[in-house]
Length: 98
Image (cartoon, rainbow, N blue to C red; front, side, top):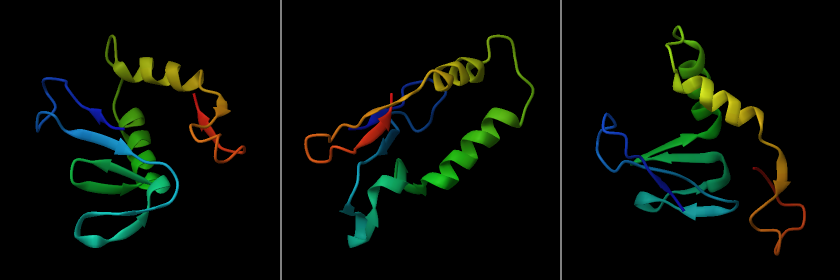
């Protein structure tokens, strides 16, 4: 599954945002990597630690504007809870945020 970014100011148009579940995956050029710790943004592979550090930077680096999207995002994150994961039929201990 992936998310295609559609905001008119996002370039290139149709940029794909993706993260995958557990287990190794075969990436471009035959490289093997752990999917659960990788975020894909177009052709870029970003370790989740770096991605979250970037998200924190975006949230905290500038003054808030009226109607700032960051405030809506923080409210959504505050409401997240640990829920059963998508693969509970294979792994009963599987968890995710939802």
